[in-house]
Length: 190
Length: 296
Image (cartoon, rainbow over all chains, first blue to last red; front, side, top):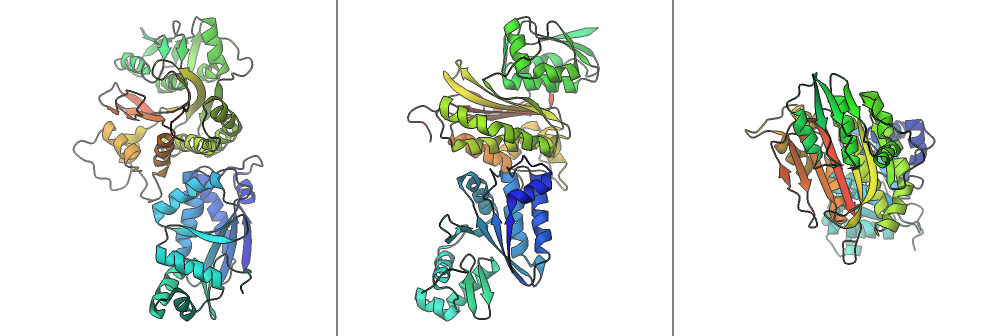
């Protein structure tokens, strides 16, 4: 299941004002996150949601903590039971990045950003091994641990471990046929 | 008997201490006259702090407006008298505000609730971009950080003060210390202050030294908040980072102490203790005009 959430629309519904385009203040952030979580509540076992910042003017630290950090913290914890929620962040510009980067560092989180050309990259607190593995999975498409081990020249057990870590952090999706990088769905692979 | 509190000719964050010192021996329910007749200039901090002073009086205070027409007229354009008339019995010639003031990025604006912060940030953005880039030679990209800084300092009122306060943003040439143009954010409230806010944290253990100065150090330097949530305390840390990036200054006064992150161009004292008591928190952020070779 794939969803698209335009944060500016959620913001306008939340603060009941058409004029506001900035994600500022903690109560606003908490309300926006609650709205996102309500939308996710209907999701099935696995969902991928595009969180779209394209029409958001700016975001401050407090709001980023509520909207980005807490959303990720809650979905990477066991609170949601068997349901797996993944996020792809779209439309993030320099105007948003300072606040988002700060809260990712504070909570030692990472997320997947969609770039202007439609590609994806991971940002935040990511180890070199995790980054290399994620980029390889993104490049390869659906990837089994053995494929990753071969591609990286690593032991298969190490590949399993890093894929588990990336999955726990909701940076790759686990399917029966292998792992897929968040943001890697729909990408053409040779 | 009415106590007369004399407002200094030039009112800023430093000279406001003279006002607070005069008030220290006057009980909150005593009658006071705030005498600004001879005041010729006031910073946004001075004006917003005067309003918070009005909030602190149990007996409605009298306020004498500046005699100088130019000064009174300027104060009117900043919106000062609009709020002062709600708090003081006004005396002297109080002009009506006519037209905007180009140096005022944000006229004095009350901050009580979260929506007020949205309003403030929305109003500042476009004008800030013009001023920062054209007058202060600061990269237009800095506008977002400026708006974030404004948002976070205003949120301190909403989240911690327990009562409303005011914000004002203005540019002027700071001849005395710097000889350059600056943009100044002032956010003042007469709420519970940093010490009381931190004391309300559940299970908080106080050190032997616990006082306003330590509370300010905890909140401003170490990013401690009354909330246990690990995401808290990022606001002031972000403000410090922004101010550091643009060679600016931030000072916070609360209770009997004042802490400042002091840049090389200023000779202010980083921590002042045992000041005359004044309720709430008073924050000032100063970003100077960028000169060649300065931070980018």
